[in-house]
Length: 79
Image (cartoon, rainbow, N blue to C red; front, side):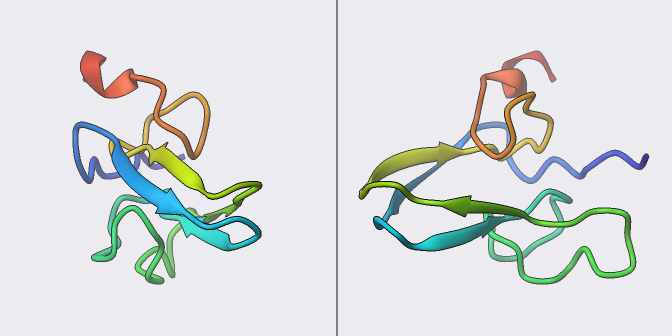
């Protein structure tokens, strides 16, 4: 499997809204980080669906190498 492009070596804090659906960019190519803009088309990557259970700030992975997609788990510190 191809390796994702590192969009940013750190998380993207995002204030999500309860009951809203978000699509996290898994390939790292989106110009609308941390969300998908369709740049993965033609690759083996697909965006990951995230449904907000409550309104709060969450930290989406920016390095695209997290072991807990789509949330940051600190992996960027080891890249």
